[in-house]
Amino acid sequence: MKRITLLSFALLAFASCGGGDEGMDVEVAVPVSVEEITPGSIEEFVTATGTVKASKEVTISAEVRGEYNLLENPGTGKTFALGDIVSKDTRIIHLVNPEEENNIRIDAKKLTLETARLEYEQQKSLYDKGGVTRLELSQAERSYIDARYDYENAQIRLENLHITTPFDGVITSLPYYTRGVKVAQGVELVGLKEYTSLQLEVSLPGKELGRAGADQKVRIMNYTLPDDTLSGTVTQVSPALDPASRSFKAMIEIDNPDLMLRPGMFVKAEIVVAGRDSTIVIPKDVIQVKQRGKTVFIVQKGAAQERIITTGLENPEWIEVLDGLEINDRLVVRGFETLRNRSKVKVVR
Image (cartoon, rainbow, N blue to C red; front, side, top):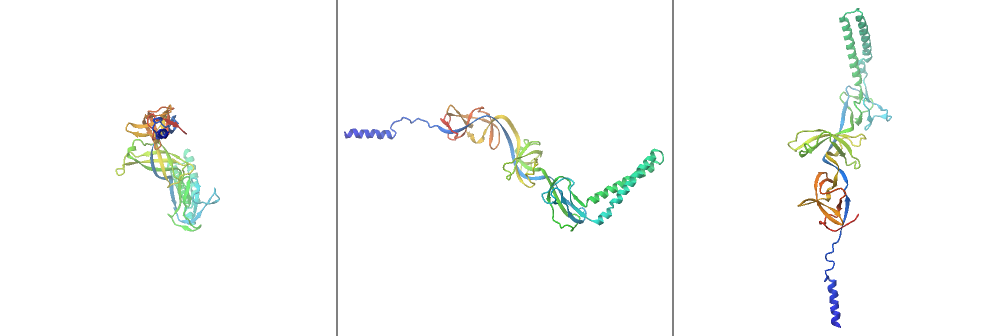
C-alpha cells in the first residue's frame, strides 16, 4: 500500500514538472497594431534655418535743421509711436524753420510760374497768328520752364521740413525729442520697416545644388508659433558653392500678411524639392534594415508576413514605397520589433 502511494506521488510530481510534452509547440500570438494602407501624398524637402529681414526698411534723417514737432496719428488720436502702422506719404514729424521757409519763397515762385505760363501762352497765340518770331516764342517757353523748375525745387525744399513715410510700413524706431527742441541736420528721426513680406537668406548643403531652385514652395516655422506655418517661395539660388563651407546661398520671400513674424526672428524653412500624390506612404519608423534590405510586416490570416520594400521620396517622418506593398495591405505599425516571418499575431487597437 505504501509503495502504491509513493508511485502515485512520483507520477504526479513528474507531470507537474513538465514530464509530458503536450503544449510545448503552442505559439503565443504577438499583440500588434496595424494600419490599412491607402493612397497618400509625400513631399521631400531640404531644411535650413536663418533670420528673417524686412522686405523694405529705411531710416529717415533731418534734411534741414528745425524745431521738432511730432504729429498726431489720425488712426489713434495720439502722437505717433513705436509700432504704429502707417501708409505711404504719411507725415509723422514737422520741423519748424521760419528762416528756411522765408528763403524758399514758395508763394513768390508760385506767382512767377503762373506769370510765365500766361506769357508763354500769349506768345504762342501770337506766334500762330504771325505776330511774334520763333525766337520770341522760344524765350517765353524757356522762362516758363525755368519758373516751373524753380517752383518744383522750392516745393522739394519745403517738403524737407516734413518727415514723410516713403512706403506703407511699421514705425520701428522713433528717437525721443522734446517738442520744440531744435534738431540738427542729419539727425535720425524715424525708422520704418515693411514686413507683410519678409526676406530670408539661407545656406544649403552643396549636395542640394541642382535640386533647390527658384519658385519652389517653402514652409516657414518659428518656435513662438508652434501651431502656425507660413508659406514662402524661393526667389534666387546661387549657382556656385562657397569653397570654405561647401554650401550655397538661396533667397526666400515669406508671406506675412498678419505680421505674425517680425524682422530679426529666427525661423526654420522647409524647401519642397519634390512631391508625389496618390502613392503608398508609410511611417519611416516601421522599417527595419536587414541584410536582405528594408523590410516591414503586414498581417494576413492572423500571421505576420515579412515584405522587402523599395523606397522613393522621403522626409524625416514618412517614406514612399515603390515596390513590396499594395493598397489595402494591413501594415504593422506597433509590435513589429520581435516579429518573424509567419509569426502568429493578435491585432489590438
